[in-house]
Every structure is written in structure tokens, then in C-alpha cells.
Length: 478
Image (cartoon, rainbow, N blue to C red; front, side, top):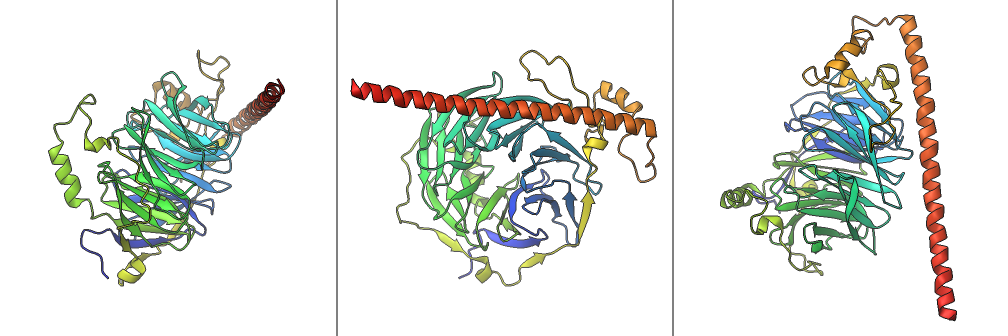
């Protein structure tokens, strides 16, 4: 049966990756899509007909997460090769490599103002980076297992993180403290996200559930049990009224949060679905998974509801206003015990003349930042800041925002070679190589210290657990 006009519609496929899609993000202008994959590549897709796709080569292992900066002039990526990269999303593909994590990096997330980047890693830490100076700022340590995801709140004052230690933590970016903790004793969250007004978080559970938490009253608001496999990713519609989910059961689900019910099940992938994302305006969404296909969908279902609801609530401009439906105000959990009144959409049955896009792919080899950036290490860190290396990469800064100090430094050091100028004086090259060797030694030293700290923490935890067991045994004997 064909879908109704207001139902979501699959518009096109993008084929080009050689392995599972792990992450996808729309550019702010809605004209491009970036994807990361197990094949170690990032790809940049254009929605224009017959446009080329760019494949960025630089990571040495699985790309786990990609995201555009709010202005769209940078593209961040995380990888299992323990690095984060910042790319300029064009045909030259300059990139800068950040090294501070000591284990695979699982997620990247820009703050809404573009000034900061949060990264989550299997080294149990979240790290925050300053994008203006392109340097490491501080780490957040409280998780006791791999951190799978970390996201900024819309106002940038909070970070939410989820870990395989079965906790979701809320962090205050001002005092760098964990201010809230949600625990789940069944499974762990694979992914977390703030709703658009920052009052709630959604978690995608390994136990097949999707949960909505209100961070103001520390309460579970909604609890959806609609998938038959682990939930890998969620994305809020910009209105905050809908949530789309991606699961290892091979489906996408669209939830109406105002009514608290499942409204669509989308079956377009073969195998697990790992990523899903709404465009910035909400008119499109994309999904990717184990079948190495990127699907582009048109939303449709929000055309009337979202606009009507927005008109009715234009007056609600203040954070202190009374609670409103748009806040997903507390209600009882929704387990959906077998009562699934939902529209199922299988585009392989519904769509006959589907536009399949296998564009010509242009490979772009990244200039390695270790040979193109001037890197210095401060001997005295700022008060309250961890010892860190500067990652000053003039090539990734727009001329409008480059600090004057940086401009002076770049006058006597070659930038990335252009097409017409590729010669660098030998003395400068030797000096740069020497600096990079010293930096690598420092980086390795910091990595070893961080690993030892982690091991010490683990041993201390084991000792405390053993002491507790002994104390309990003594108590029972007494």
C-alpha cells in the first residue's frame, strides 16, 4: 500500500562506502551530507544532480563519528585510531589531527556557538577542545568504563555523556564537575542527545529501549520499548516534537513525543542501522548502517503539526515560564506492550522510480598535520588547566577569526603548499621534523602517564570492592 502524502518518503540512496556507515550529519545549509564508515573514510555527498562525492583519506582505522561545525566551515571526525581530525570540507581537504586520547575515540560534538568540541573515548574520559585556538582544554573523568557518546546542551552550559558503566552523566562546563547521574541496571546507553530546548535528554539503550529524562526534575518521563534489537542512535526533530531512532533490528522508528506513541516504522536497510540524523531544518533525515548504504528521507509528517504548534507557542519565550507540552512535561512511562499502532513503510515495496545516486568519487589525501602545523608546548599551564599541547593550524582558520599572534607566526613559516608552491627550505623542514619528534615524545609520555593513572584507578576500585566484601563477611560473622 502506498504511503499517504504526509508520511515520510525515501528520496534517494547514496552508494560509495565499502563498509558499514557509523555516523552521518547534514551541513548547516542542508545542501551536503557527511558520513563516516568502517572503511576508515569520510565522505561528503552533495544533493545537486550529477555532483561528485568527496572521499577523505586520513584516518587509519574505523571512523566512528562525524559532525559539521555550526557554520559549516569545518568537519570533525573521531576514529578508532585514537585521533580526532578537523577537515575543511572542500576539494582540497586540509585537515588537522588532534592526539590526546589513549584509546579509540567514539564521538565528536561541537558546541552550538562553534567555540568548543567535546570528544568521548574508550579511555573512560571526555575531553573538551578550544576551536578558536585549536587546543586541548580539559578532561572529564568519572566514568568507570568506555564512554560511548558526549553531547553539549543547546546553551553550551552542560555536557551529557553515556558509558558502558551503565550511567548517563551530566557535567557542568563552568566548574567541570559531574552534577547529575542517571543509572540503568539493565543495559547501557549507546547514544545520548539533548532535546532542542535543553530540558530533556534521550538515550538509545543496548537493552532495546528509548528513554526520555527530564534533567530539571531528574525524572524518567517516557520509556519506549518498540525495538527488538539494541538502539544505536537517536535524533530530535528541531521542533522537539518527534524523535527518530535507529536500531540493530534493521528499522528506524519515529516517535511522537507529545502524544507519547510510536507513529512510523521505516524498513529501508538490510541489517543493523547505526546512525540517524535530522537536517537542521527538519525537512529531511538520513540513515546509515551495516549495508553500507546512506538513505535520504523526506520528513513530510511534521508539515502541519509543527507549524501549528509553533504558532500557538510563539509567546513562550522565557525559560521560567510555566511547563508546557513542548517540554515533554512529566507523564507516565510508555512501554507499548505489544499495542503497536504504527504505519509501516517499506520503500523497497512502495518506491519504484527511486533515484539511486552512485556519484563519481574523488579521493582526497589529507595533508598530515604533523608536517603542516606549527606545534608548540606550553611549559606552564593556566591555573586549573591540564598540561596540554597547542594545536595551532592556520590552514583551518578563516582569515576573519585568526588571532593576530597567529598571523605573525605564520609569516615566517610555510603554510600548506599550494598547487604552484611546493618547495619548503630544507632548514625549516628539518626544524619542523625535530619539533614534531619532540612533540611525539611528549605525547607518548602523557599517554603512558594517563594509562598508568587509569590502571591505578582500576586497582584502587578493586581494593575498595575487596575491602567491602571483607567487611560484609566480618559483619555476617559478628
